[in-house]
Structures are given as structure tokens and as C-alpha cells.
Amino acid sequence: MSNRYESAKEMYAAIGVDTDAAIKKLKDIPVSLHCWQGDDVTGFDHDGPLTGGIQTTGNYPGKARTPDELMADMDKVMSLCPGTKKLNVHACYAIFEPGEFVDRDKLEPKHFAKWVEFAKKNNVGIDFNPTFFSHPNMKDGLTLSSPDEDVRKFWVEHGKACVRISQYFAEETGMPCVMNIWIGDGFKDVPADRMGPRMRYKQSVEEILSEPYDRNLVKPCVESKVFGIGVESYTAGSAEFSLTFAATHEGCLPLMDNGHYHPTEVVSDKIPALLTFFPEIALHITRPIRWDSDHVLLFDDEPREMAKEIVRCDALDRVYMALDYFDASINRISAWTVGFRSWQKAMLNALCTPHDKLKKMQDDGDFTELMVVQEGLKTMPFGDVWAKYCETCGVAGDESWFEDVKKYEADVLSKRA
Ligand SMILES: [Mn+2]
Image (cartoon, rainbow, N blue to C red; front, top):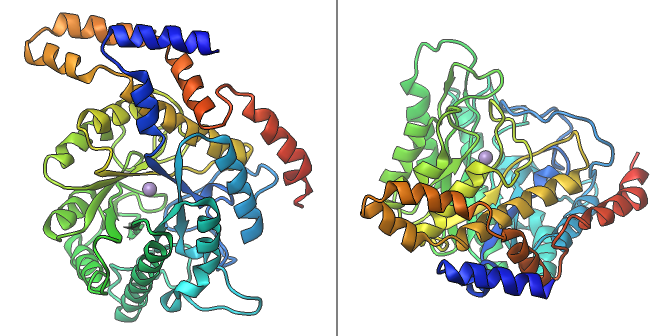
């Protein structure tokens, strides 16, 4: 193993890449691990169906049913993945005392104390998301953009409660909390008014962000979307709406989910465009197959290109990275792990790319050589650098981690009825 790494290191050094430095750098970059892969976006505050235009498919046994099960599963995933993790929690994952319940507009930090305890135990930060779906107070599919003032106010109060909870997370963990606002509000068929819902959505987010918070601790974002299931004709929070909102509201970040654009658009190209203007941006990283299907992230072309853009823009400290996918058709621990490890691979690969040399070729107009060299990079011994990175992080560099998952499935998951 070490011979293979030494040999790979020499080959990378010959093209101007310091693999030791790449490994050292990646270890400290936080990536947010989404709690909702573990239970198919169900949460703990309701018994109803998943709504809001999103859907999980599959019925693989062993999904987490309680906070303890979900956290045990996340512990297992984190133990199999290299790098620095952060937790990503949705408001519907509030943890109540036995017999206790409050609705989303009344949520308090105490309902997330167990998440803080879990984060502290793992020495990780927490990102947060108000949950504007899977709730009876979505009226005609609308929340923050609802023309019903009582409905709209309910959801504004939910957003404000989430700002307070985000501040609590940041204060408790000592790490900033990215608070992402995404709504599935929209219409199945041709609307009669496209601007009204957007005016109300704008007003609602402004009201939410009027809740006092420390801008160094809470990083509010708005996430756009192109369409959802049952919401095919119109979504209030479109790309133009969300990007313009962030651009015109100091301290609010644009969040791009690479499943939330038309299929021929690529977020890799949008990253440098936004970094040209915004001090900080946020990402949801997923694998859309023909639509926003939220397949498990793989180490394939678009994540590789996205990671390269973050690294070559020298923006690892300006981009908040979070995973967002959910597959209920396969072992969920494995799904989580494959996705997290894939993004780590994409980033390590990006850190092992001689960007300065490639940029010079572009600027000098050497496009023939640029193509030749970029193709050559694809067969560099990246696997040996990856294995070394995993070894320094104390996790398996090959797929032997799956043995652990199979054992966990036999000992733990299969016992869940
Ligand atoms: Mn997303």
C-alpha cells in the first residue's frame, strides 16, 4: 500500500500536484450529512405522507423509526466515511418528550437538544432546514406563498422559530449553522397569477429574516427548484426568484441543488458564476436521473466537475456543501456511505488536479494540449491517493466497509419490523 502511494505521489508531483497537501487540506473541509436518508424523509413530528412535490421510492427493510435508531445509523455511516462531517437536520426531526407535541410554529431549541448532544458527542456542527412540507397546514400546496394570511403567518412563524433554533445550534456547537429555506409551493396546471405568490413568498422570507440572529453564526439560504411532482407547471421559488432574492438581501445565500434545474443545465458552470458576485454560496449535492430523482451520489462526471470548480476558484471556505438525496430501494446505510464517500472522492480528485497549469493552457489558447492533458489526468493513479487519504482518516480505502454494513444489517436493521 505505502509503496503504491509513494509511486502515485511521485507521478502527481511530476505534473505539479502535491498529494500530501491535498490529503491534509481535504481532512478539514466540512460536508453536511443529511439525516433524511435514514428514514425516507419522514421525521418525528407527523404520521402523514411525504408531500411538497418530493417522493421517495422503494421499501427496503430496516429504516430508522426513532431518534435513537436514526442517530445510531448516522454514527455507523460517519464511522465508514473519511473527512469532516456536519449534521443536516430538518425541522420535522424535532424530538419531543413522551406525550409532548408542539406544532411547527411553536418549535423551540429544546426540541433539538438531543441533536446538539449527538453533534457534541461527534464533535460536529449542525445545519438546519425549516420543513415547509408534509404538514396539514399546506393549503392547496402553498405555505409561505399562500394567499390565506393565517396559513402564510403560520409558516412565517415556523421560519422564525427555525432561525432561533439555528442560532442555538451555532452557539452550542461553535460552528456556523446554514439554514436553508426551500418551499415546494406551486401549481400543477397553468396558473392565473404567477407574480402574486412570488410577492407573498418574498414578503414571507423577509419577515422570517427579520428575526434577530448573528450573521456570523446563522447563514440563511434560499433554494430554488424547477418543478415537483404534482407541481409541474409553476413553482414560486424558481431559479430567478431565489437568486435575485439572495442577491438583494444582504447576508442571504443562494443555494443550488443540482437536481433542481433543467436536465441539460449544470451546476458546475453556475458555481463560478455565483462566486463572481456572492461572498458565500451553498450547495445541495445529489444525482438527478431525468428529473430531481435524488439518486445516491456517485463519483461521476458532474460532481467531479462541481468539486473542480470549488477548488479551482479557491472557494473551499466560501461554499457550504451538503448532501441531499434519499433512496429507499437499497440499504440506507450503504446509500448514505456511498454518497458521502463519492463527494470526498470528487473533492480529493479536484485537489489533485494541476489547475494552474490547465488555466495557463486555456489562457495561452493551447486548447489541443488542454484536451490531451485533461484526458491524461483521468488515468492517473488516483485510487492510491484515495486509499492513502482514507487510511489517514482511519477508514477503509476500498469497499471492504460494506462488510460492516452487512453485519449491521444482520445485527440491527433486520430486527426492525
Ligand atoms: Mn435540496
